[in-house]
Amino acid sequence: METTKKLIEAGEKVTTEWIEEQISWIVKKIEQNMLRFGNDFPSACATDGIYRIKPNDDWTNGFWTGMLWLAYELTNENKFLKQAQENIKSFQKRLDEHFILDHHDIGFLYSLSAGAGVQITGDDACKAQLLQAANLLISRFHEKGNFIQAWGKYGNPKEYRLIIDSLINLPLLFKASELSGNPLYADIATKHYQTLLATVIRKDATTYHTYYFEQETGKALYGATHQGNSDTSMWARGQSWAILGIPLNESYVHSIIFPEKYIAVVDVFLKNLPQDLIPYWDFDYTDENPSDKDSSSAAVVACGLLEAEKVQAYPDAKKIAKGLIYQLGENYSTENIPENEGLLLHGVYAHAEGKGVDEPNLWGDYFYLEALMRLKNSNWKRYW
Image 1 (cartoon, helix red, strand yellow):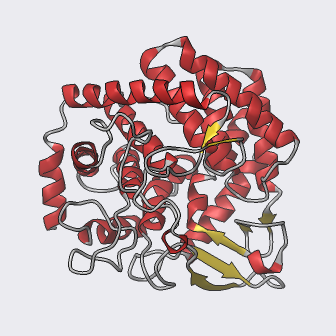
Image 2 (spheres, rainbow, N blue to C red):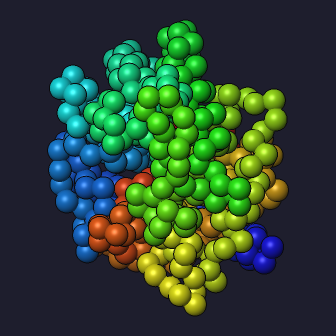
């Protein structure tokens, strides 16, 4: 595959010195942002390169706290630890008040806050918070259909569906079983994971964003999109969640046979990349019919391939991941734009809504730094 060859060649330029240089400027930017954000949080996406300061009210706030934990692990500087711990207090308040938590993104929020906290510090309060969050997440499970409802009030007939993003929420439940000794969390996560694999991946290995079920029987009905270009297109970020989420969940499930669909899911993503190797926000778009790029999708895929490398789930996974990271660092980073608060340029949040189009976003920033951490330290213990 020509794109694979190009990525491997680009990845050969990723040296130890290059990784350290990337981490150095990123840590400085996190410190700069930390001073401005204080105990509040940045918005999910930037506007003209600047994040709005908000309370803890979005599905993306864990990414900011996750970056603080990464900065602490990279530097051992207490200022990052102190701010991450302050954020943990906010996440506890949000749980206690059930503040904008009628969704499945509890995993995105609490794996990167309390989950990272209990792993790094062993703090009992973080452990208790993670278990409280896991209890909330499993309360969204539907036995009819064997899935965790993605959005809205539990049982809302218009929201009887899962979405592909949920793959990254499930590790919270596996961690909860490990910490508590209660297999219920892992059992629910495994059922949802198996349901998702059986529904959202199409025969051609592209993916649906969402999948609906019949409420009375739990029968799988049909796939659709919410943020992709169409119900039949391959939304770039959705495909990237599959590339990361499958090996993440397999690290807990340990299927006898690694999902055979995985290689095809990665292949179709890589094969359809444009010339600069960073995807458009939806694969309906090409260099001949261009649209806005989504750098965040490439960052997620890099982490996914580095996870897949651990179990040799995809040929040359690490070499390809390094190529994606190099392309992002050389052509999509804000390293030479100090006034921009993001790490990666040219991301997309929700294109149809005109939200976060051609802007940095928190998950792109987080996963770029996580990918660098994975390369710097192959023994790094992920927060998922």
